[in-house]
Amino acid sequence: METIACNESEESWTIFYLMGIPSLPKSLFLPIFFIFLLLYLLILVGNALILVAVVIEPSLHKPMYFFLINLSALDILFTTTTVPKMLSLFLHGDRYLSFSACFLQMYLFHSFSCSEAFILVVMAYDRYVAICCPLHYPVLMTAQTNAALAASAWLTALLLPIPAVVQTSHMAFDSTVYIYHCFCDHLAVVQASCSDTSPQSLMGFCIAMAVSFLPLLLVLLSYAHILASVLHIGSREGRSKAFSTCSSHLLVVGTYYSSIAIAYVAYRADLPLDFHIVGNVVYAILTPVLNPLIYTLRNKDVKTAITKMACPWNPNNSAKP
Image (cartoon, rainbow, N blue to C red; front, side, top):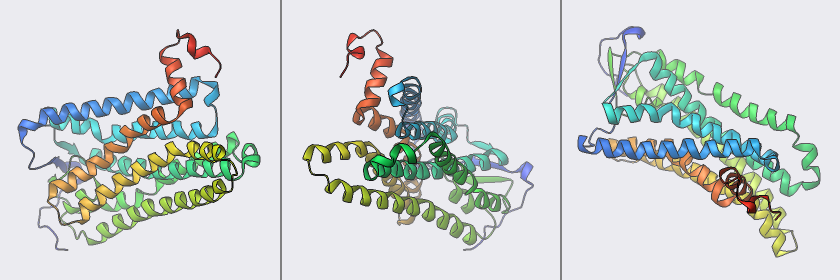
């Protein structure tokens, strides 16, 4: 790939200018702002409700829900990395980011994205042990084991993007860098560099594929064992109960990888630039919005705990099932 001719600038003097969605008319900025604001508030409120419900409700002090609050905290952090800046862009036209702010946003966005993939793998493993090895579940899934699994997922995800982000920060940039995106995505920043972008584009693509497909393979492997185990259950009621414990997680996994597929197709297909940007924005918002809706609508225990928390005076909340 040819390099872009420009006057290299010191890091402290480099400013990144977010182009947003280039062909979006300014008349739509305010409606887009309110849509994004509504979605962001839904993400904050929905995931905060799950966090509080799991913490204060003793019946939810189980490994599955411990991993769920990790996922909820992650969704809040993931969207807070990008959405506030997008809101500022559409409301005030605030498009500028300093060198350090841009690369911090890039690092956090990709770290939290990796964390979500790894937490979903840990949740799949939890369901595998619960269904395939129920007698060993209390021994295998202790509080110490759960904490170690969650910490490993977070730590690995925080370390994995560092090489790509550091190498990208050492590329040559002009004093004003025009980023054709709503936030500092790795590929968008690389493409705005004056250096040869091929090595960094390849590295980013390889890391993205590894983070996307390896966790997906582990999730599919877990569910292959779960399916084989469930099919050996004699009663229809038993099979239905086993599948119901996995339904919420399966929907979340499906949503997560669907949003990745949308972003991937938008980048790789021969589509206008705006589709590339919108595909990545959908990836950044879709899963965190749907996760709390899935778990509150599909999971009876979480739904009951949130209802009890919201309506403590309701006599039905204290009634035994």
